[in-house]
Image (tube, rainbow, N blue to C red; front, side, top):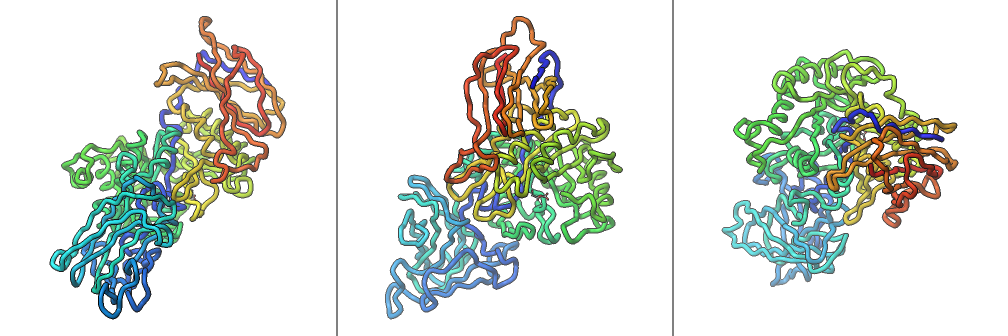
Amino acid sequence: ALLFVDASQGRLIPETLFGIFFEEINHAGAGGLWAELVSNRGFEAGGQNTPSYIDPWATIGNESFVTVSTDLSSCFERNKVALRMEVLCDSQGSNTCPMGGVGVYNPGFWGMNINKGKKYKVVFYVRSSGPVDLTVSLTSSNGLLTLATAEVIASASDVSNWTKVETVLEAKGSSPNARLQLTTSRKGVIWLDQVSAMPLDTYKGHGFRNELFQMIADIKPRFLRFPGGCFVEGERLRNAFRWKASIGPWEERPGHFGDVWMYWTDDGLGYFEFLQLAEDLGTLPIWVFNNGISHTDEVVTSQILPFVQEALDGIEFARGDPNSTWGSVRAAMGHPEPFDLRYVAIGNEDCGKKNYQGNYLKFYNAIKRAYPDIGIISNCDGSSSPLNHPADFYDYHTYTSASSLFSMARKFDQTSRKGPKAFVSEYAVTGKDAGTGSLLAALAEAGFLIGLEKNSDIVEMASYAPLFVNTNDRRWNPDAIVFDSSQAYGTPSYWVQTYFKESSGATLLNATLQSNFSSSIIASAIAWKNSEDENEYIKIKVVNFGSSAVTLKISVDGLDKSVALSGKTKIVLTSDNVMDENSFKEPKKVNPKTDLLENVDKEMEVNLSPRSFTSFDLLK
Ligand code: AHR
């Protein structure tokens, strides 16, 4: 096979081509990127009714010593449920409390990860019928080993009304499966609410779990689409993500039950935190908001105005002046500077719904009137025929088999170059070709992405989905990053993303492949400047999707005569078996391997392993 690269001319790839899509699915945020250790911190997880579910909270001590229930006595208006703990035993007298006292514990999201020497801020609200003597501790999963502890002692008058307690615990031991305990040996009635435990060590103190943050930062995403997906729609509208309920002091947020992915979130990772995440990643936020449509119910267009106002308010919250109504709320949360919100998506996968087009136009016109520069993304697919409504971008999603996605590298070849551009905001190989993250799936995605790179005059943005999975709650397979309380690894699909981190904003060079294997090989070439060493590189990426090795002759033409190409590296992603996956046990089984590239010249012969993805990085 022959690959001709013409380095004399090229076309600029959009600055925003490759980004990420974060959805609150698989406990990606709650129990994932958001570092809060307590699950169901407000005892609200059953909804606003009593008795609420206190799950996964559980009682320490049997009913002759302590009884636990919930009532609606909280001091927080939007989350009235509080925990009532009646302690029947005492340190003295006939009904002596068991050793260590009685109380409640929270195991977090399948265990809290506690590390020796690290500090954890515990905050909770308490009220009592008398004096309080509480032990706050982080312990092993069975409570027998104490990793960190503090005493909270208060007089009756101190705690006759709701009182905030804050303490920092320093761990003297480690466990990836720890729990938080609140225990006492003093008789009386204690109410507890909004119990939080946060590691002090999060990204910039902003609440993001460091190593998960780093994994996404490493792929240098140029945009962050959030907060879903189906999560934005809800199975029912009443359970959809609504931004106003997710901002302000964390204690006052009501939280909500995401009824598509079927779990409760306290909404600690709310609208503000998503915007902060985008800023911390140095990437552009793309906000997907609910357009009055869920999976099963819809607001008719004649009644959609409150939703339109909610979207306008959300934009004002993100980028309004700190003196504006909603900009001032953002400023009060510690971010007077506007966030760089340039794109919004009106709903998710709702194009075929009865009220979509009507609702869409109401949102579109109102937003364009108030914010003419905002790029608006429609849910309707404009890749095969023109849209019948105005839009800056159209959303395109595809989940399919490996061979089908590989062949979809040509999907946008025939798309009209006029009209709105494509935002491929969700794509992945799914089903038996993918398992929970195979090499086969990753190779097909690599081929598809090369196709998008080549079509980046019409494809403006693309993101893999889903990004994260907590291995204890796999709602969707496969995903790019797998984690539990203490470990994380990238699936082969994640590693494919790292090959494209230089593409956005680079120059796409003309690369022509001549081959008998043209249905199983695809290649592209870019020229890019590394801001770290100021050098210019040519990166040639080739997927060999077939099961035979291929000798490829690469010829780089059109360089200035004085320019000599010199060797750099060759990065290969392959494995013995195309269905190989990574795991906690073998996190780097399928992982890019870097070698020095020898005998580099303007004409050179390289070998492509069967079922492989290779990049050749040449220094210009
Ligand atoms: O990525 C998982 C889901 O797939 C998203 O929530 C939805 O948009 C799509 O159907």
